[in-house]
Image (cartoon, rainbow, N blue to C red; front, side, top):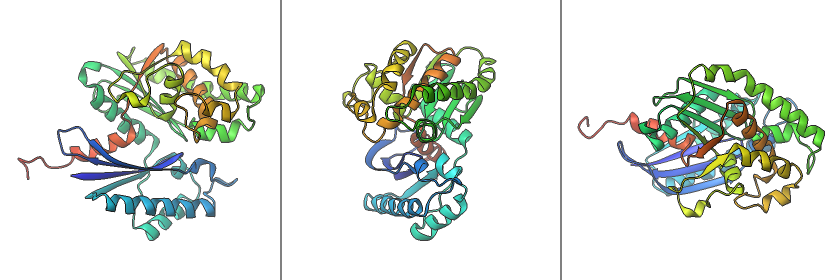
Length: 313
């Protein structure tokens, strides 16, 4: 069957169309992506601005039409931290349903972490052993750990690259004092969760997902996306520690010129690097591997798990 996954995230609204059935790897068929930066379209009270709501409704409507055009039998929509934490979330969701017909479920941070973990487990398989999974989004950082398909523990922290950039790093390049304050904040937040993970022992494999980690790995020397999904891509803490001060000294335009860094995400890369460095340091991670599957694939896999098999039909 052909499924569409509509991800209303803090940075982008992304429709991923896949051909899928139980027991098979979902095959991407189409991608429709719009940079929204919804986390930056909030007023001082934390509400999505009227202009932001109009833009959100319009982009979701375009995605729904694209799903119909591509022959999707079903659309699996969800929203993450930007909508979840908006003070006018109920109003926004009502407008979306009224204008587009889409009832937009809002995932909790723990749901995000658990579905991402599921995707990573399916990608690497049981032989990967105990997994520690890190994911940096626009609004939040998710961390999950476990040996099964459902993690033993999962947390979500308000440490997304977009959120931190907008709230803590106003300069271009940002002031050294602002960077130090943000670094302390990030590490204090992560440190509160470390004991909850360390009690399970050392992981056998550490994995990261998300655009932020992919871009950090790329500038540190990992293979290009054009080299294919199955090329192993790693990121070491040593290389990240070398890159953080370099990113701090760059303007957004200079970061956008780095290999693999998109213009729309360049301003968030420093904040993302500070979160990645802090998480790797405090969790004792020297090296991690990038996984091409993440939250959207986790949503697809969970949906397929609930479809009847041919023998049950």
